[in-house]
Image (tube, rainbow, N blue to C red; front, side, top):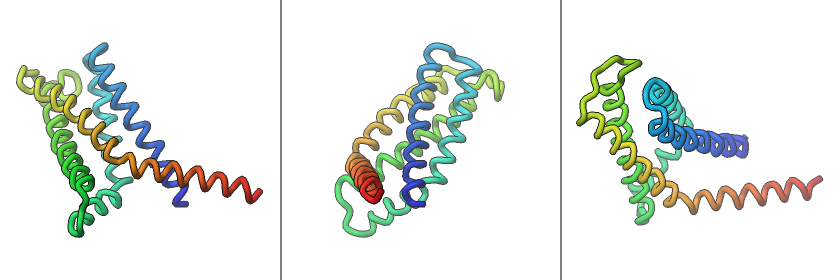
Length: 153
């Protein structure tokens, strides 16, 4: 069960990242309703991500009460920054929505939305880089498990 959950979580992360990349491309090429719908889908994916990863988040914050490493502290700071910027993105998206919420776009909210999205993309890349050790352990354990399964046959 744990192996399946890890693989499901990895697949979910890949879908989330691909959707995020597609959302940025759509924003550049086809702004408007398609971008707003994809934004709503992204919000749903983020809520699902939080639900799937709540134990991981809890363990990250719990590690701060013990002797945290610099990497652990940076991961938590990055995670909190991503959360704050996501809230700004959602609020500004609602304020500048022309199709779904039918609001008037102001230059300031449009800039806030665009720059919070760009900064968040950078922070997500930093968070992934800080998580490379865990990713390497996941893939090495998966490879070892697959080899053990093949040897049993």
